Length: 170
Figure 1 (cartoon, rainbow, N blue to C red):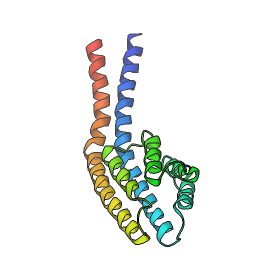
Figure 2 (figure 1 turned 180 degrees about the vertical axis):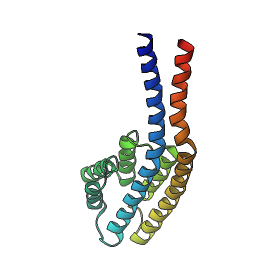
Figure 3 (figure 1 turned 60 degrees about the vertical axis):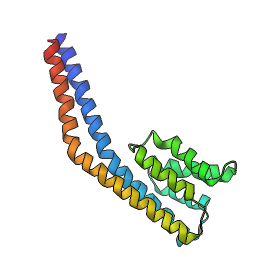
Figure 4 (figure 1 turned 90 degrees about the vertical axis):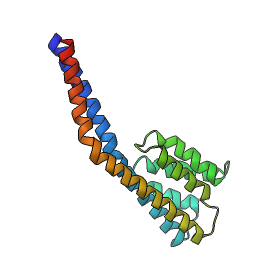
């Protein structure tokens, strides 16, 4: 019975380490998805002359969760007309943020982007998208650095903490 408990402790802590490593791995991938979404939004606005609501719906169909849900909620809020663009963007961001591996820095970048969304002509909007992409590039580089530095350590630490607990308890 003791060995079964020891095995459960070891499995739980190892799983925790692998989960922490997955989060480190997921963040750069989601940042790339977000950058792709902004570039697609730019193309819809600049070259397709698509209204923001329609552009958001097009993006929602093209993207994977959670960003598909972001643009879907954003389009829904714009369609109802109950809020302005900035509020609709921020509410949509807050609704999906917990489902992402992204951090507060990325949230602030996207929130600032939402404050400019729909406020300017197409050329100025293109510049705002470029600015958001630059900030997301910086965040992606930071995420990749952290992934390279800590991913293997998180996996090993999970196992080793479990092993330590098992040794102390037995």
